[in-house]
Image: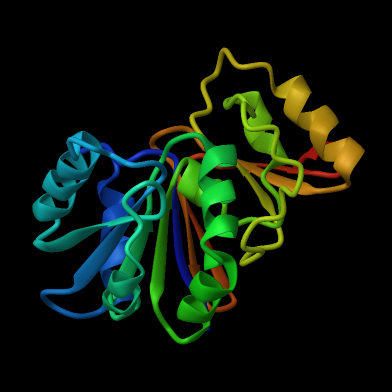
Length: 213
């Protein structure tokens, strides 16, 4: 059982079609959503922006969880009791390194296979894939992470924040060299996975083994 939502971004009045699919996946009123920050959000600036976004969807039980400097193992149980878990945007390499440090890879995979809904935004979406190397097009690997295997919840790679002026040839070459399938999303697009069913919201571009399909 897998229920995944991959956003490029969450923008009020723009991402509504993805939001509707998310609410269907959660399938209950008053759900609890745990927000995992990609780094310690000391002043909770990004957390509160996201809290406002979810409140617009009618989700008010939204709490912060830190895998970085404020990590508290006693709060893990509360996180795993959430109806959905949100993986935030940020630097993909640093975020994944924290997941590995806290041994969260298997923990989150188990959460998903037990029926929990997993939401990713940008870096959070990339982490769901088999590997995060594609993040090098948008993030600096400042920590020189070499073990780049992600959660492997999907069989494709994910490229967020796509704009028409971006050079798609780089992604085509990447796909060809790695013999991989890449889905490219603008900030209006998203991907919904409900068990074996995959649904594309917006104009998602598919590249398979170096070819645009």
